[in-house]
Image 1 (cartoon, rainbow, N blue to C red):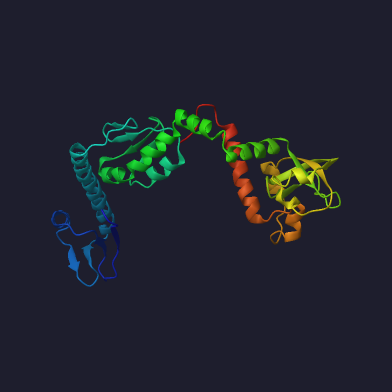
Image 2 (cartoon, helix red, strand yellow; image 1 turned 60 degrees about the vertical axis):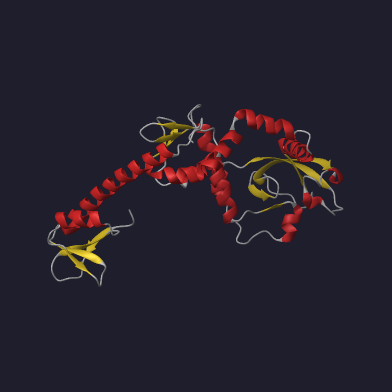
Length: 296
């Protein structure tokens, strides 16, 4: 049912307006429930007199919504019986229940289906039959994404990519990140113990300057700011900034200048801090969540 509402009318007599999509049977039911109602061509609505009219109209609209939902569910069941979906991810009960491996694409597709909802107890998405046509429209994408999210399929893709240049480059970047080191100009070092922004690792806290020289010629693939530089760099040790540190950090008034980005670190702006704080909160929630209680 399209948007319907009941609102106080401007007439001098107390009462309220009612609007709902035209349906001959619905109009008959409305006139039986409100025999004193009058139609207004100018306002394209019904006027129901009485001080309690708004409350009575809202109650009637709710009953109509339930009636329409039951009717649409019946039509959806007929459509399913005529042209059913068959999939290992779909179970038919009082409604349609979908269980798949975790996939962001599946979530986006299901959230686009009217009246679809996640049932925490069943650990499944529930879709009423009235939404069957919409589910059919989204189903190819859902099933494709669910298949790609299967553990065996994920492993197959990982194994197939291990010999690619992209995989090797990603492995090298990951190994470099795990070293928790960062090349810094010795004459322009960041303050230790304070959150600063970096191009590669986001907002971090430097904990130590080792004094060991970094070989720039071997590191430009990981640190583009070293391209074309002739000056020496030393290694700084870093860690991820905590949520408390991110909240305490005073933001820069303006984005980093080119010279600040070329040196490799700068004072973060408020938008940069907001993104980092959101990630830190999500990480804290994941760590606090009991094992085996992950949400969809």
